[in-house]
Image 1: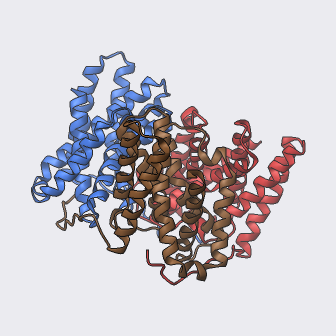
Image 2: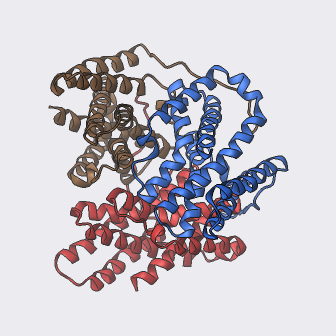
Image 3: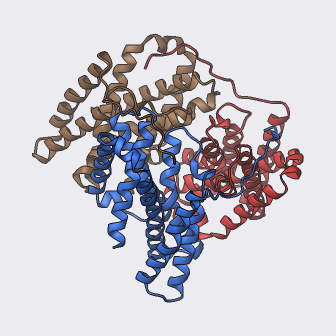
Length: 205
Length: 205
Length: 205
């Protein structure tokens, strides 16, 4: 079940990334690259940090075809995708939580420290979006938007705590989804944000 | 012969990257870094993705001196380099094809899946230019310019197909050069472009 | 002693990075990420290039708490930190030299070529700042500011030369500090800069 949700999430990430790329007039190839980086960049960064080889998409290259296919489909039906705003926000929220759980699992397998388990979940959840924004020449949205990384951290902490308490993995996946998913959706609905740090005076350097 | 063309290509990439850096008023050191990232970044990304250590420039550090030397020479003779526009576009086209072939070879050595062989060739060919544009604070040219990645993919597919059909490597290098090089040159001459995906309405998130 | 200075330097880097992030209205989470990337990004890049696993912060995850703590403290006392301009420039100069020495040591351990030892020191010293500027959507300061990378290279060369001549490590740490630290401070005081390469005509591509 986690695996199915994982593929649904990758597809959804690829499609929303393709819309972002379309707003910057990229060509079809650029759209595919942005989709791959967004959907797979988080897991790739995590694997590089943890020395966890082979990378997921190197071992299972068909996922690249899935992502590029979803991106090209988005070009064909952009108007429809654009109207389905809420379904996509929900899929994106699902993706964030699923990516976080998958990332925690990988770190647990490598025997990492609890802090690193949480960080690995968060890196998997958010780095794709950061890379997308850097390639599109924006300040990453995740640094000044709604709760996003926070949802990932909360999800990871709950999931990992449950596992260390000896609760079954399947149960904890459901609990993590049951907390992280509504938290993200509510933060979008009510525009919950982290407090901002606004600092104006120039320090000189 | 491939090795000689490889060094020629690295030198040419370093020199055109140095001109880019000069347009952004970087200092000599910045010019050298941009040159190194552009000339060696594609191969480095490929090696990180494939867990192929040691990195090329760590094993053969003299290539760093070659790249920095070429970059500093470009500063000295910028006016001349600028006038040699066509020779450099030709060298750049040669570089794209040579980098692609080298990248495919590395992936084949590691026993990668055919899709990954093509991707490794493309990463080697185009990531250097993407990193250059990110460091110069541009949206990467490769996402909305002439055929570039496409040339790399076509070259990689032909090269790899030939090898799997049992044709000799030397022949396939020549064939790949004979297809990829003119394809890139023609796409510059006639401004062939991939279709663009232009999408205006904001999706909200 | 080097270890103590290393932690002081990481803390100082985290705090100045937090101020940078504050100037871009990032939220608390964004501030922590920018602080981590700036303080730990150089060492991470070096370790990825040298295949030196586990990464420092994966092995010692408490350093992440130190960096985030320093960043959040900076938010609380931003006005004070801003007034302490000179102490922070001095700590930043110390950090550059200490990071360089640590980077050289790691490369020496892995048995790298002398050129790579110097490059590893430089990567450790400057990549954090480059990543910070890319995430904040700037052209990296290190490419067109005061002597920075140059200080790192000079420090690394002196340190490594001394070690190959058989001088004791402790002595060479002191010598490297005694040369690199004042060099950086003087270059800030007198605005020493590398010559710039300004090139205006567009090359066409």
